Amino acid sequence: MRLNGKIAVVTGASSGIGAGIAKALGAEGATVVVNYSTSRKGADAVVASIEAAGGKAVAVQADMSKSADVIRLFETVKVDHGKLDILVNNAGLAVFEMVADLTEEAFHKQFNVNVLGYFLAIREGLKIFGDTGGSIINISSILSTDPYLASSVYAATKGAVDTMTFALARELGPRGIRVNSILPGHTNTPATDGNFAGELGEKLLAGTPLGRFGEPEDIAPVAVFLASDDAHWVTGESLRASGGVRGVGY
Image 1: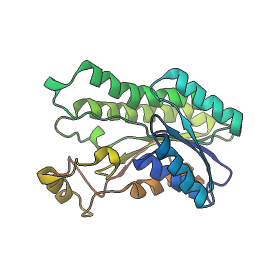
Image 2: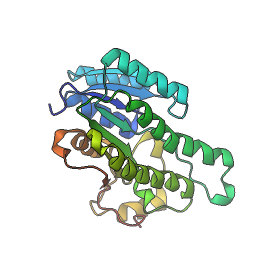
Image 3: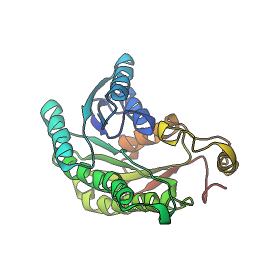
C-alpha cells in the first residue's frame, strides 16, 4: 500500500488509460477522485471497481477545458478531502487528419483539452497540495517525439505537454512537487478502437519489439511508481511506456 492516505485526482478516468491508472492508485491505498467529462456510467464503474477491491473513490464531473469546471473540481477535492497529493492529467482528445483537412475548430479543441486542460488542473491543484509536496503526472504520447502521418496537431499538443513538464519540474521542485510525463505507445483503449486494424496495425505491431499492443494495465504501474516515494528522486522526466517502439513503429 505505497499510497496509503494519499489523495489523488485522475482526469479523464472513466475509461482507457485513465481508468487503469485510477484503479491502480486505489489498489495502492490512495483515495481516488475519478474525473469524467461525459461518461458518468464509465466513471461509476471505475469507482465501483476500486471499492470492490477495498479502496476508496468518488466520481466528479468536470470538463477539463473549462476553467469554471476545473475550479469546481478542485474546490470539491479541498472541501471533501482537505488536500491533494497526486494529480494525473490524462483527459485528452485526438483528431487524426491531414493538415489540409483539419479545421480550426479541431485545432482549438485539441489544444484546449490536451494543453490548456493540463495547465488549468495544475494551476488549481497547486492551491491544495500540502507542505509535504506531491506528484504531478502528465500523460503524453510517443507521438510527441515520433508523430504519425496526419497527427501534426495532436503530436504538437503532446510536445507542449512534455515541455510544460520540464519547466514545471524546475518551478515546483522547491515545493517538493515532482512533475513527470508518461509517453504511452500503441495502447488498446476505447479511444483507439479500430485504429490498429488492417495494414497499419500490422505495421505498428511489427515495429513493437515486445510483440503486442499495450493495455491500460501496462501504463498504470508506471504511474503508481511516479506517484510513490519510490520515485522521490525522479522529476522532469518523460518516461516511455511503449513496448520498445522507436520512431513511429513501422
